[in-house]
Image 1 (cartoon, rainbow, N blue to C red):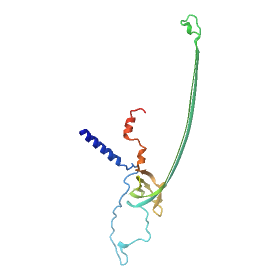
Image 2 (cartoon, rainbow, N blue to C red):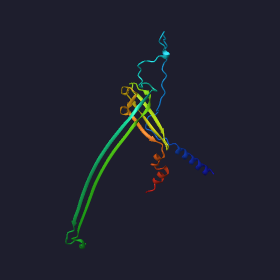
Image 3 (tube, rainbow, N blue to C red):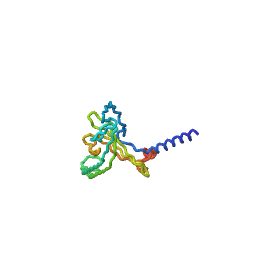
Image 4 (spheres, rainbow, N blue to C red):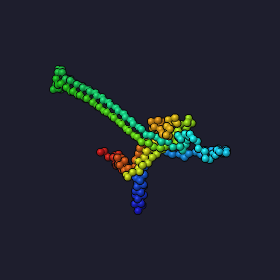
Length: 222
């Protein structure tokens, strides 16, 4: 009975592990932050001016403080290629004989010749080409304002589809001077950028061998 109970608990743990389909992330956490409380200045109301309803006519809406939002325009395109080739060859030959010498034993082997040849050739060629394109946009939050004024940003976007959830995550450092008037920054201007696109769909895990199969293949030669 104890064995059956242990097996049941083990199966339950495996089931719970299978439910955790959220993919791992390379993006720095946290991915959001609340704005910090600002000190409230003492109101100095006049006959016309009211501090509670004052709105500046020309106000910069670009992100600059913790909790502000910023839109990153993703425009990543990478391409890499590599070609290599090598070849080698080696040839060897051995030719020897036993001369007829009077007075030596085993006269049957005298005059016997030995000839051996060996040849080895190696030729290898390899080519590698990689191309990636990632475009879109994601709105992130200012996590921290660094001492030099740069903004540490991070954010996440989740899109739930029929067969799973897609995760778009981004983190990095933005220089305030690169922020456009519409509060956007190109992903190519983000320093230490960590950008990823992951999915929790079942076909993503189908490409990975299960732990039980890896266990048996660790000692069974196939």
